[in-house]
Image (cartoon, rainbow, N blue to C red; front, side):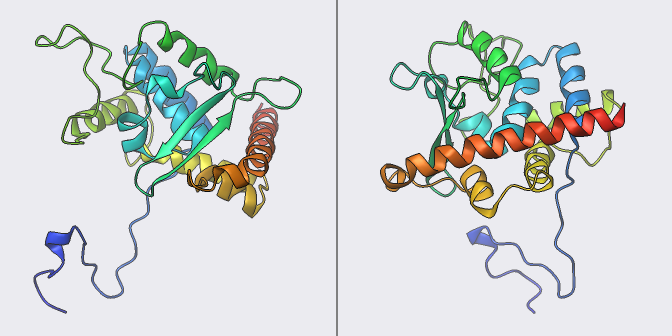
Length: 233
């Protein structure tokens, strides 16, 4: 094993033999609720909503802040859906916002995104909550170089202010959403539909089945969430 990682310039990291893979801590639903409440209290409404997007839609941090545009949410041609993109693997999916009966699947999230749409006409959904002295409009949390260090500092500030576990990060909320899905007994197909969306080339073939799986999976997760809340009372 060479002392210097020969693949470092390719972005690959070496790991010593026997060294365990470092896992991202998984947040619970209660921790998400506490984080969002504190974020709103401190004036970081955008981060509070973004955390819910990561949990509900299982979207990666860099994609929530660097790929989710306001035009993806309930556009005229698809007023009952939201487009979730994953640039890392080139996949995307149109998530339904209502089930077959017209019932809202994400009532809390939709209310917050509807409010954001009143102020943002184009571009990224999530922007800094305080105007920058050099910009007349709020800047995106992610920089032109795809840097999220400032965001992560603010997230850590919120975590500490909320009295949550120090090891939690924004990514913990996405992992929490996956865990909730597994605890809700989602099928493999439902988990794949939620976390590994069909590519745009396959959407015409699988759109109907994927939509059904997404609706079914979302309902199961909300039922599990409600059941857990009842048991904790």
